[in-house]
Image (cartoon, rainbow, N blue to C red):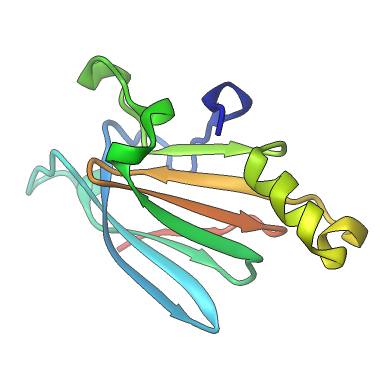
Length: 132
């Protein structure tokens, strides 16, 4: 995948730094739990974060070692949230699924970059975000 096709996504105002994927639950819907890497006990913005997809078409998780397009050369450049309307992943799904070819909704490729893994979600709905 080409990171140039992706833009930073800001689902939570005032979030600083990078999050790690804490847990993933896939029971009819998709829940991704994140924890900020540099948590401070007295900072409300550093609580767990829940990304909830009511609807999704596909997802995959990749060890960050195999996704060098999301590597950064300094921690100041690190970011967790990206999204794109055009990606190789979307094109692959369109190529192999008639449902994707005929889909009239906008399909978005969300990327959640942690320090050890990268989670990709294809969805036609914006996820709900909660700070727990």
